[in-house]
Length: 423
Image (cartoon, rainbow, N blue to C red; front, side, top):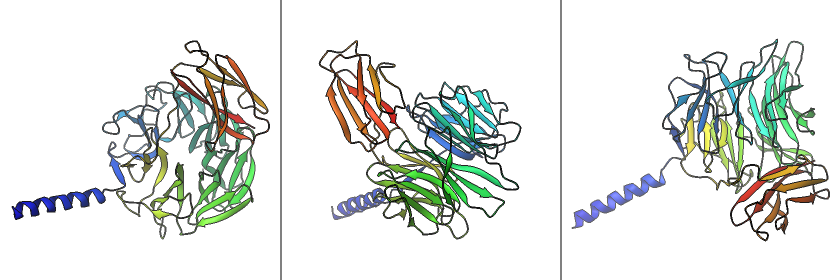
C-alpha cells in the first residue's frame, strides 16, 4: 500500500513539474528548406507563410488545420518559385503579397493571385505591407518605390514617396497606422553614415514628411496608451509621448527589436534580432512597457533572429524565429466582428471631418431593438442611444479628438461593427 501511494505521489509530482515547465512557445512544423519571411492569420484561422526562393520553394503556403499540413499557393505568380517577402490583409479579407518588384492580390484565400503592381524600371524589394483605415493599403519598398499606396482596396496604385540618393540606399523597415489617425513609416540607411528616418502622413498616406531622425530604426508600434514605440538596432526601445513631444529611452539593454506587438492587458511583445553581442528571441512586458524580460522558453534560443509578431484569430501570438512558433496559451480574448448580414452597417463620408452618417439595414428587426454604441480607440464608450428602426443616424463628432472610432449597432438577432476615421 505504501509503495502504491509512493508511486502515485511520484507520478503526481512529475506531472505537476511537466505542467509547470510547459514552454511558453511551441514549434509549428512547416515545409522543409523554407526561408520564412512573413506570417499572417485570417479571420477563419488559416495560416499563411511566405518564403524567399530557397531550393525552388519560394512563394506562399497555407494551412487550414492549425499548422498540421501546408499547401503551396503560387497560382498566378509570374514565376512559379517567386520569392515573397511580405504579406497583408485588408478589412474585406483580400490578401496581398509583396515580392521582388511586384505586388500580388488574392480574392480567394490565396488559391489564385493577380499582379496589381510591378516596379519599373528599377528593381525594388517590397519589404512591408500594411492595411488600415478601411480601404488604404500601403506597401513599403526602397529607392524609387519607397511607398506605394492604394485607397480603393487594391484596385489602383500610386507611388507616394521615393528615396532617391546619390550613392546610398534607403528602404522601409516598418509601417504602422496610428490610433491618432496618423500613419508612420521607418527607414534605414545603408552604404552611408546617415541616420535613418521616421516619416509621418497626416492625410491617409497620400503625402509624407519627416517626423524625426533616428539611428537605425527597425520596428514601429504603439503601446496600449497610444504612445509611439521605436525599436533600434543595438539600442533597444524608445517611446514617444505625444503630450510632451519627447522620445524616452525605455529599454537600453543592447537588444534589436525587429517587430513590436501590443495586446490588451498591458502586454507588449518585442521580437529581437540576433547579432554579435545582441541577444535574439522575444521579450515581454506585462506592465505596458515599464519593464521587459526575455521570454524564450520553447524557442530555438537567444542566438536566433526573431521577427514578424502577429495575433491569430483566437488570441494566441505567433512569431518567426528560424521557424514558426506560437504561444501555447491564449494571451488575450480576441473580439471578433460579427456581421450576420452583408453590408448591414455603412458610414459616409469615411474618413469624416465633422459629422458622419451611419446607415443600417434593419429589415429583420423590431422597432425598439436597435441600440447604437460608439467607442473611441481606447475602448471608452462615447455614445449610447436607441435608434429604433431608423435607416440613418447622423453623428456629430466635431468636438471630439481626431482618431479612430468604432460604431456598433446591436439587436436581438445580430451585432454589426464598423471603424470610422475622424480627422
